[in-house]
Length: 69
Image 1: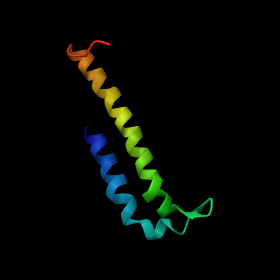
Image 2: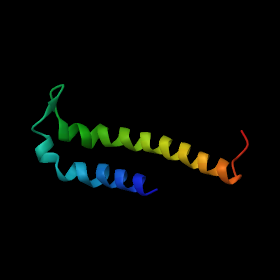
Image 3: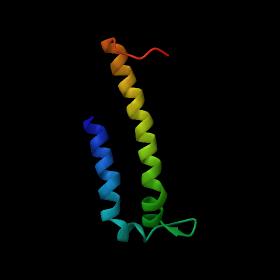
Image 4: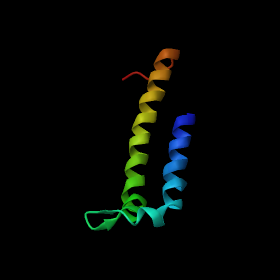
């Protein structure tokens, strides 16, 4: 849980705090700060959702409270 919260904080606040420095880097003609704010953070959040769901399912199975498939 702590790992997920740290990653969430980094991609919610950390990336956006350094957007001016990241804008100096260009990817496909777009500034990296713009890309991370518009797409990068959202992609990471979706990946985190799947990772968290898988980890929670593992915990549920270990504790014997998993849902039947």
